[in-house]
Amino acid sequence: MKEIQVELGERSYPILIGKGLLNDSSLMNKFILSKQVMIVTNETIAPLYLDQLQQILGNRELQTTVLPDGEKYKTLDSMNEIITNMLSHRFSRNSCIVALGGGVIGDIAGFASACYQRGTDFLQLPTTLLAQVDSSVGGKTAVNHRLGKNMIGAFHQPVAVITDTNVLDTLDDRQLRAGLAEVIKYGLIRDHSFFEWLEENIGKLLGRNDKTLVYAIEKSCRNKADIVALDETESGIRALLNLGHTFGHAIETGLEYRDWLHGEAIATGMLMAADLSQRQRWLSHEDVERIKAILLKTDLPVTPPESISAINMRELMAVDKKAKDGQIFLVLLKSIGNAQVTDHFDNNLLAETLNSFCSGEEIV
Image (cartoon, rainbow, N blue to C red; front, side, top):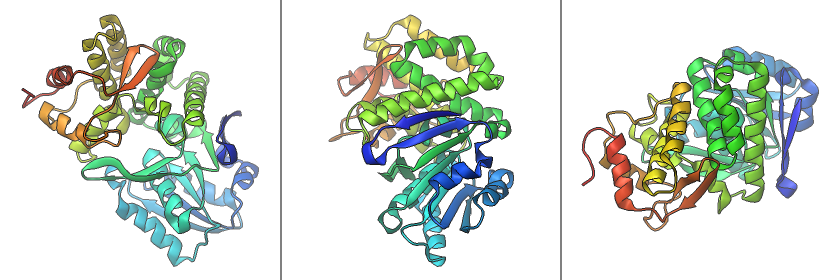
């Protein structure tokens, strides 16, 4: 078992990575101290792992909220279902919410935990690669609004992240590829040697080689843990983790959180960010082509859906958590492994990027 510590003072917690951890009752008992436990999962994961987890948790007051599967259900209504379930069973502030699922479940359950009686314990059991390498770590919890992604949320750190790599055996190929988009992101923003390793090993990752997957998960989590420890509430360096996200979130919002997975939107967003970086004369053409090549090899989309025009994208990007006083902030690349958060970009060049990537009505 690998262990990575997220250093946040009294809110510090471990990320534990290994095979068969969902079956480790002593590990669960170490972090779930409450007798009242609310398991939040979805209709896809429940048939696979819910019974197993309930047996491991043993003699506790267990309740379960099973939500529909998909980003479009990451809403206040879903969170309200969790809260109502807890109130109906008279859960106290000392209770614990356990998120058994991917990024959507982790975000909703974490936000419910942050809000219920002003905060309960919260344990992450991520079941997708994307959740294991990114969304389960760092305490960002939220739900979506029809006008913008993750616009309603809170920072609320878990007591631990327990990553059982065995669950990836039941993960479909599309979800695996979506998770790899976030893995690639870490190489792009701060770890050039990791990006080179990914170029060499992406085939093994797609082939689900155990040793290679564990290394990629551990390396990604270490990168994120280091950044979160320096900037818990995203007031500075943590914003680097949003490479491609302003573009990608605009795609997700434009699609009303249907059809595309989060990692797919982020893959396209990262290439768009790289394209703008090149137009700014920050990034070389050769590096843009390397980024495009690894995304294509991972079978990830590199252009937005035809239904979203350049004008749509620009309007949706303005509704972004990182925008300040109407000004968009973007994460752009100086080189592979060297990212920068900036509002000092040429809006005409942004328009060129959007026009070149999007079908339909262009910005003039």
